[in-house]
Length: 121
Image (cartoon, rainbow, N blue to C red):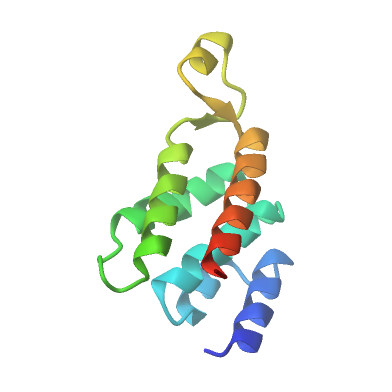
C-alpha cells in the first residue's frame, strides 16, 4: 500500500468512517495496523480501553522479523506502558508507576514524536 492510500485509510479510521476491524483487514502489514491504532487513540477516535483491547494481544502475537526491529521495540514499550494505565489510578497505584488514560495519551504522543524523529536520522 502506498503512503497516500495508507494516510487516507488512517484518516477514515480516525474519523470513524471505518472500524478498527475494517482497518485491520485493509492494512498491508502488522506495522500499518499498529500505527493506525496509535493514531486513532491519539485522535481520541477510540478510547484507551478500546486501544488496549485491540493493541495489546496483537503486539504479543507479532512475529519477530516481519517488522523493523526499532518499530517492534517501540510497540513493545507502548504495550508495557498500557499495563500500568488505568482510567483514574488511585494514590497507591500511582506510587507504583500507574498513570491515567489522559497521561497515557500525552506520553504516547511524546514517544511517537521521539520515535519518528530518530527514525528520520
